[in-house]
Amino acid sequence: MTKLTHIAYQIIAPTLIILGILGNALNLIVLSRPFLNECTRIYLRALAIADLNVLIFQIPTIIRLNHIQGGSMFFAIYHAHLELVLVTTFIAFSVYIVMGLTIERYISVCVPTMFNTLHTKRNAKIFLVSCFVIAFITSVPLFLLKLVCRTNNECHKWSIEENIEITETIYWYVYLCISETLIRIGPAVVLIILNTLIIRKFRIVSKKRKNFLIPSQQFDFKNSRLVLGGVCLRSKKFQEEKRLIILLQAVMVLFFLTMIPSSCLSLLYSESENLKLSYQIFRAVANLLETANSALNFCAYFLCSKEFRTGLSSIFVRNPVENNRKRASVNESDLKGGDNIQTITIENGNTSS
View 1 (cartoon, helix red, strand yellow):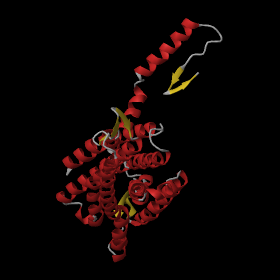
View 2 (cartoon, rainbow, N blue to C red):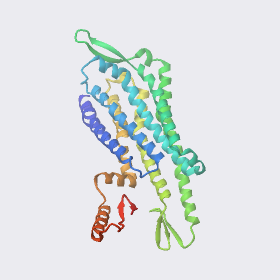
View 3 (cartoon, rainbow, N blue to C red):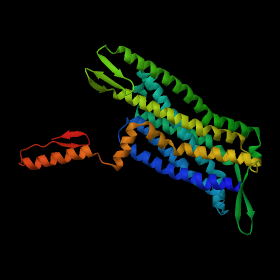
View 4 (tube, one colour):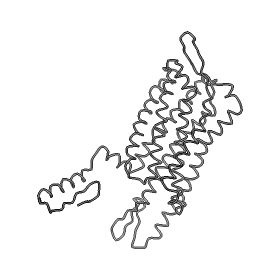
């Protein structure tokens, strides 16, 4: 168990947390750039903030699991009553945001006539606030899971223990089943159904677009390009839908792989199992996967979104073509001279005289 604790909570978990915090910070920076529509960016920024808070609030958890909190009353109260409430609230908030993004894509692809009515910044903000409130209300009963106990009256050391009077009742088990259904199992079912419908409808729409083209037109579905008279005209909306769906599928797969084990852990949790090595191994794997869910969304964005990669590269590397054009315009104005000469400058892809 000592070796397991060392590997899981002193090496892997801190590494995931550090990488996840950096990745989500980069997400927020890149998502501040307008490469997606405003409503979608609101959802993705909220998802990055939720994941960032999950990772930050898991730092005290790692401290507790490594037994370095020192036994102070402040840490004991935090670990007993606040730790799980805060972490679970932001985990649930993150899950609901992914579900909201999937619902948005479902409306866009399957019920496009309602999309413009529902796809507004106001509705997005109302949805996010409602999700956070529901996540918090669902997590609040975890306040009762542990008790603070004094272990050494002379040294004023405190510890936490399971609140058996609460956790061994049928009401607590009913609460766990309801909370897991609302936070993990229910959203998982919704994601499966909606993504299946989205993929099916998207394929039908793609086939119809191909059939509606006249013989002189060609559609390159691999690259989402309309070829007309030898000229390629890119369908921006089609490309955006396609990439967002790929991104959502990646996030959904990541969700299933990382969240379902922690859901099983919540239902099986018991202090009496802590002395079993098999239970501790499963607990460590489930906790690490849950941490990875918040840490690896950056990888999903990077691998599945060309616009995200372009936005990320623009932070560190300036566009050499744009710089050459700027220098050319400056040199041309210097050569021409005069107060009445108009020069064309190019700034961020826009022209101005």
